[in-house]
Image 1: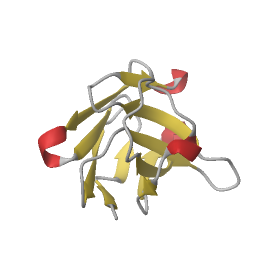
Image 2: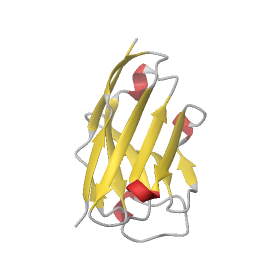
Image 3: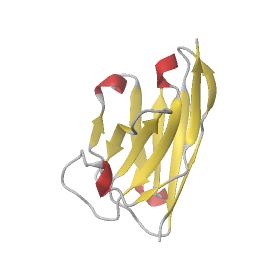
Length: 123
């Protein structure tokens, strides 16, 4: 069993920054990813990182967000800069138990999800 907990969300003005953290406890994990969801829309991938440090980003965050991880702490981070109002969403962390060679996975590959952390960007 793996327990996933996100933190770091909050309210920020447009153009500001936030840093999200995701801790996975219980055992070491493979991929770690951030997804986000707004009411009435499907959950979408923001960024993912393999256990080896390879990363994958959705186009709408490239150049603004950076995903990283500390394997010793089983923790992933999402540094979000130049935030826009359309980045407002609940951000979820997801992890896999297996290690996959490809950076991008289907959401169905992720085994454990956190409860989410709200990010609100005001204009």
